[in-house]
Structure formats: structure tokens, C-alpha cells
Amino acid sequence: MKKETIFATVFGILFGAVVGAFVLFTTSRGQNVAQTDNASENKAPKITQPVAVVNSKTQLKINEPQNNIISKEKEINIEGLVPKNSLVIIQSSANEVIKEFKEESFKINFPLVHGENVIQVSAYSDNSTPQEESFIVYYIPE
Image (cartoon, rainbow, N blue to C red):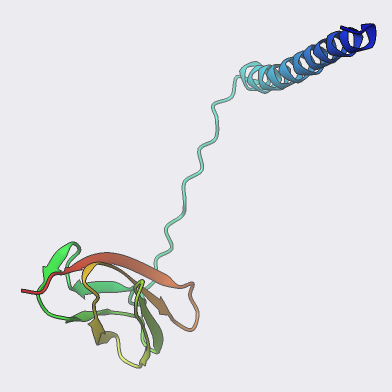
């Protein structure tokens, strides 16, 4: 081998080791500092819990069908409750139905494809974030 090749190989290995050691030690030191700060303060960690917002409005609730049912029919009825004046979007991998409901209850006839149908129901009302529920219906014809 030539002297230049040996020198380049040794220099590359040493340079890689130095960079690796630097990254290793700076990463572990940052973790130790964070742990030391919490221990030196002797304070219990603050645990924040989500605040439940009490809302008198109706929430999205699917009454029918139940999750993981097997249907022999090509279509199912999806029934449930939504806030008044909601836009309801029902989606699966093969179909999509969009409909607006003025009342709190809704009923939509939804087509199925052979096999597993993962169906997501989303309700959009005037002053809230979208509400979503998902369920699975298996369509197995006789």
C-alpha cells in the first residue's frame, strides 16, 4: 500500500472516533444536567391534566351500527346524534357521503364494499372543532 492511503485511512478512523466521542459525551451531559436540575430543586413535578370543557350541546354519538358487526346487506343505516345544524361527513376507503342536518338526530344509508369497511363519521357544527368517530363493518354477502 502507498503511504498516502495508509495515512488517509488512519486519519479517517481517528477523526470519526473524535466526532463520535464528542457527540456521545455532549448528548449524555445534556441529559445529566436536566436530571440534576430537577433533583436540586426538590420540587415535585407539575402534572397538568386536560381540562374537561362542559358543553350543553349535543356531541357526536353513533347509535347504529355497532363496531365490528357483520352485514349481509350491501348497505347499512348509520344513525346517531349530532349538534343542530351540523355537516356530517361519512367516509370509507370506497365511499363518501356528505349531508347537512338541521336536527340533532341523523340517519344515512351508506353503501358497503366486500370485506372490511372502516367507516369514519365526522360532524362539523358552527362553533366547535370537528367531532369524529370510527367503526368497522364487515360486508359478507350470503
